[in-house]
Image (cartoon, rainbow, N blue to C red; front, side, top):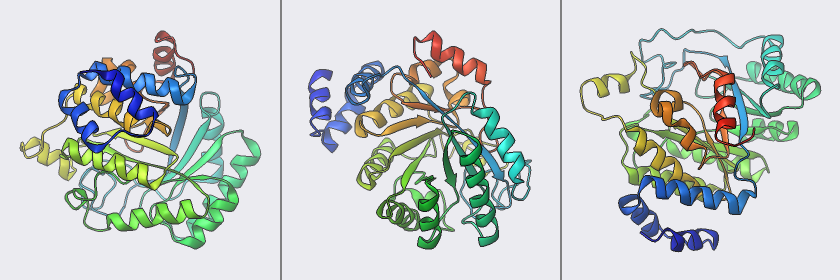
Length: 323
C-alpha cells in the first residue's frame, strides 16, 4: 500500500470514506501509525510533544442510565464506591497536586445530567481552581441545556460529552438516553463558543465501520479534542457478562492501535487524547500510541486505577517525547 498518496489526501482535506475503509482493510498497523505520526508532524509542528490531562471523579455511582459498560450504573452490581459531590477543598487539593504534571484538569460527575444545586457548587469550585491554579479546566456534567452551557461559557471552561460509538450502534450501548441528546448538547456548546472534548470507547462490540462513523461524526461536529477510550470490562456490568458468554469479543491490542492511528488520520487537526483502558489493553504497546496521539490522560480514571505518573512520564521520555 502506498501510504504517501494517503498522506497527501489527508493534508489537502481530500481523504474520502472509501480511502479510510481501504486503509483499515489493506493497511498494515505500523504503516498507519507512521501515517498518523506524519500527519501529526504536519498539523502540530512538534509531533513529540504530549499534552497531559487528568480527571477527578467528583460524584460517583448511582447513575440512573443503563450504559452497558458503566460500573456506576444502578443497573449493574459492581463494587464501585458511591458518594455525593466532593467538597471544593478536596477537589482543589487534588488539582494542585496534578498541576505538577498536567496542563488540563476535568471535574467529572456521574449521572445523566447535573442538578442545579450541584451545578452551582461546581461553578464555585471552577472559579476557585482558576484563581488558585494555572490549569485549563474541563467539566463533564452529562446532558446540558443552554442556560447551564451559557454559564459554563462565561467561566471559560471546556465541556466533555462522549458519543461513545456510532449513531447506528448506540442503542446496543444505552437505551435510557438518546444519541440525539448528546449531539444537541455538543451543538449548543459549539454555537455558544465553548470548546468541546468528545469521543468514545473502542471495544463495545461495534464494528470498525461504527468506529469510523463515530470519528466522522466528531469531525462534522467540529469538536476541539477527541477522547479515545478502550474498553476495560468491569465485573458486574452487562458488557462484562456479554464478553464472558462470548456474545461480544474483546478487541486485540493491535486492533486498538490501528483504531487510534485511524483517529488521527480522520481528525488530523484535532487533539487526539488517549484515556481509559490503555494500561489494560495495550500493556507494553502503550508507547506506540504516542505516534498517533497528541495527549494522554494520566492518573486514575473514573472507577479504574491508572498507571503511576512516574511510569507514564518515563515512557514518554524513553520514546524521545516530551510532556
